[in-house]
Image (cartoon, rainbow, N blue to C red):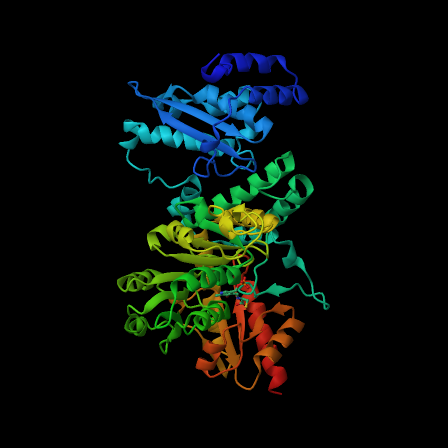
Length: 581
Ligand code: C6P
């Protein structure tokens, strides 16, 4: 018997070996839990509570005076079976040196006892959190660990996506493009005339490959349950998939911590979260919110609303005559009154790629925060939030080959921690009383209610797909098509194209043709099987500035080809003939 009369690890392991899977083991765990001495009432405090459990688990760690020091642990839970699991952990860890704790193969022990699944970070019993807490306590005490340099080694995913520099420079060739197109079943759709559709509306929403569709189907057919609630098999599997996706997003944008990734319903929801939570807590009369003239309504209206609530003022940095952001004007507008700069990575109308690094540096000079609306840029431009040192980033799954209904808010951990909770409800709380509530830790604090479970998992599959091709290669594929489209369109008299030089532009061509309304043009194109978008593209201030009410927009993505460009321009020519007859 070990301390507090708990059986030793060997005794526990022997006992387990004798027992059948299922009820016998559960009964043993409950009996083991009953032998765990209760923690005194005054130690059942919030500070001693281990976060991440549905049941309550309290843990108290004390360092002994021995040399080398040993760690004495005591713990308790209000759930009988969890008490049994806690007892196993105490037998493994209590009274051990810091080194022994750090090196103890707890996974192997739980494998041996056939209890491995209980150690999953997603299981609601919180054992994983408890192990983490004990280990971090041991690490803190362990001098040799403290002296190790921090690891800056990028994660495997990162290496996979950005590491293969040689491949990153290879263009997507005709054969590869054909294979990619085969991954998108929707591209085989035919219109009423039997013409295969040409999809040039990816800036509104991309299509998704069968790999993403398969990932979604697989969850619904084999793993589906709610996340972070139940402790049963399906709940654990879904939670694990959901959290794996968060890790994929983290790695994709090179965030430091998983908890900095908040799943939302989309870019719009992410920006509203910041405007409401950060905005209301940090803006006041006299402060300024600096936007640009090329912002989407999703990055304008939430700030108008925040300004109305707080008394702050919204200002707009103008564009140059070349459809670029005027950095001179932006710099001149920055002052200590500027509290946040909110800028799109790529304009959804002009395709302009904004110089984010310069913008972040300029904002830092006056102590302003920066939010990047990455809805259009995330689709093909590698983003490293750490090297960019950006405060907030918002994007949507549906524009990057993922499902609709899911988006991401990245925020620096310190900022997100300081921000008040936004939506209230289940999952975002630590405690609730009849008088008040305390919020959960990140990221749960900002994920109230049932989150977009399956869309988030689908987004993870989309990231895998993008990584497999290589984001930079997709980024280089777009302007190849943009250039061709622009050259051919320029041959049509009366065509006016809105956008900067190709090198400063992503895969978007917005244009008007004299005497033809953009909406009419798009309808004729549709009749030819070519899908483009017409309208103000949720960027009214920009259109007003351009002196137009609408524009036609063709947007290209990884699955588009030169043939698509030819069919598009042929359809435009046909429309011109009709309207100029
Ligand atoms: N632009 C377009 O056709 P949501 O709807 O929340 O997923 O994304 C909003 C949004 C925010 N910022 C930018 C730069 C965007 O382009 C969009 C969506 C689509 O241009 C639909 S209006």
